[in-house]
Length: 270
Length: 270
Image (cartoon, rainbow over all chains, first blue to last red):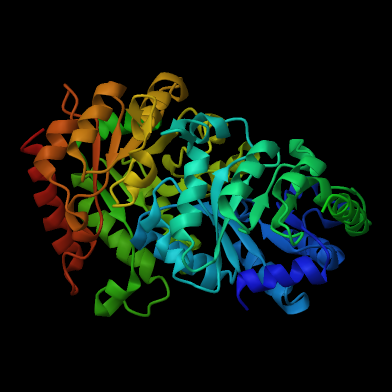
């Protein structure tokens, strides 16, 4: 299924703009999972099964798997999501960016090896570094625009001919790179005014919004700034606040409660 | 050993500014390696053994391994380089870029799992996205500055307050991020005037220069623009023109001949 079609259906049918980020840190796993060979898969699959009816997407962060030589568990996790929760799109958070011939390899990694429905991509190297992902018309390509970290301003907030660099990125993507209608943008929840600006520049384009929860972004301001007229347009990501809501054997139930609360807090302003 | 120390020693003792890029594409391997389970390792290790005395560094491109589920062969390859060619630094070409907590995981991947001596990093997310790599003082952190692909100009050549974005990146790295003296920059050989500009902004900072060979960059112009007074300062990368110089069982000897010719062509202008 086309990523955008699946995402729109998930927004409606699951009544949710929440994206659960899967950033598995074994040091924070409950004691009963510690040391098990497939602990990363078991932890993430339990979170997924407990929250799938409450989310519009899942976003595994590949670095947490790669640091622990656990690519096989990431493959198994995405297979698990597709098999048990069909219709919930999976965004591989990889933030890749390289020349075309190398980007082709990264696209194979994301879409053919890991079978992700979408990938996050860094725009610094320009259009031809993004084309190999865009060449998969059913897949989503979500470009970094305005990131939620403090250093995001070092480059993204520079003035470039009467606008900020992140605004130029938003316009480039909306006016040029999105010819196949499969692009999205990353805009941090820590900057609601800039979410509103990106929304104004990009029409109905889906925005992936990290930064609520552990990073301190405000849900009300985020939703009001970024929602579309149809009440969609956003994938509001929460990772740590949901994954580590509980510390014991009931961690998945605690994660479900945190996801439910977050989804409802978002929907209150939708 | 500190990356910068190893690099300077390699420039002198091996009399070379050549970096051989390891971008293994099995479709282009010689027939006798086709279909072998460790073909990627065998191909790359043969190239390494045939060229190690002619290079200042090796640069494996992780996408080519990840697309084929071959991270184990990348680990084995870097182990092989360290064991058989001690003193030749290994740059993991990964172009990572993410918020601090995620960048910590990527740093573990690059420096602890793969045991690379340096990594390429994308600067779009700013200083705190780079700090976790800089926290390894013995490792090299090579930031994208001016890339060799056509789309490189989409963002990097924008005017930001009287300079181009790539110049701002060069200054940020030289004046701020390089406090521990372990940074380098990527500047494409397709833009010699911009190599000269980056050299002027960054003193003796090592520049990783892709784009000669298959991408069409000029060796003479590159060396004259980027060399330091001491005849160092450059890692001039060639990948495909060396890896695929031969198509038969003598592919490693053909790669050596191509590497020797390239090294000497570089040294003629050093």
